[in-house]
Length: 149
Length: 145
Image (tube, chains in turn purple, green):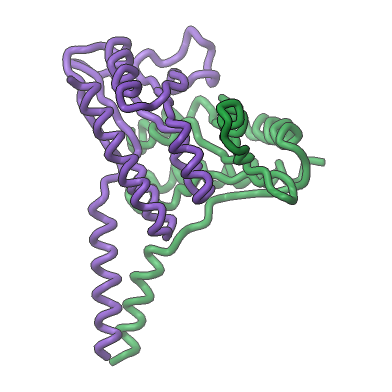
């Protein structure tokens, strides 16, 4: 009986802990347009020891170039050391590769949005991968914060 | 007394269970898999947006070959579908397929959208539609000879 209750409490606590992790990491960059925000984001990426991979419109190659969305852009980046280490541990980590931040231009600035890798890793049921994803989340937060300075 | 507690525990555990992404495997090289995937995509109105050759990128820099490439795929109307259901879904587009080289050939798998469905129930129908389309594409990929 006691074991059962303990098990139930543990499961509920685990559920509450997981629910606390946000799906998205966001940052608003005020007073800049999409091109300006992209440039500061690329600088922030380099400053955190990541490599810029490419940028594209959200609908790139889905519509003719002239019709591409001008207000939504994706920036991809990675750190090859981290990528190699992660893939050696588990191929599940491909789900968070390469790193990505979506930029959405709004009235008074640009919203930067990233999917939280620590949230994604919750579904893997692999505690040994979670600390690496927490670290990656911290890197995302640092990049987002620096891009907004 | 024990039974209801175990039943409740099972419900909680099931809610957190790992959902399976859509996947398909078959023999062949990475290039032939890409060719077949491209054909399957076209048949379903999808475009191959970009292939991220993680294998080549790592090997070029002196790392081991992980045998992994990421294919980004999509179609134009998915942007509108995402905006209508929940703009947060833009972060999933273009959709991703992981291509993994194994001993028996190439395994292609989608990201797991179940977690998104749980977090954003209102976007469930759109996510289910995308998942069904990816399942159909991968089924075709498997059957192309």
